[in-house]
Image (cartoon, rainbow, N blue to C red; front, side, top):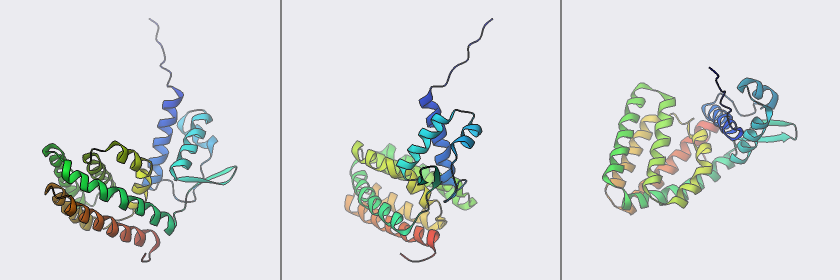
Length: 219
């Protein structure tokens, strides 16, 4: 009986390597200033250097890494301007999304957010940083999805990973849970203006917290 070996397409290999490296950067396994060496990564993932090279280029485009020299690629070191610009974009898009979500959310949408909030409360009680970060990201993604605007989703998608990278350092978890519950209640009220106001306050508070965690100074 003969057997055949399934060959993984080059594009799938690239996406697998990209997803793994992106998550390592977000989780802190690869830290700002760490070097990404094609040969070492190819050996580690058991692949050729081509998908690794393509994955690194994608990480450059996403803002996670940069070329210090043509032959040296490192994880990007965040600075206050990076954080400011990203949160300005977040403020413009997420606040708008919250208003749309208040007007368009279905009972099923709201039930899903309630479930995520319950999970976040459990993770907060346990002090589970990784789970809290994951749930909070999913909660924001859910609110954007509730806005039911595909262009809005596409506009936020390229920066979603960088936002997780920055905000995972924010360990003021009980306060985050309070703010997320208040945002949910505002959206559930069906009042777009109220939802936008809570979303704006949340983004700005989160910005201040992120700056403190990253740089130890007020914005």
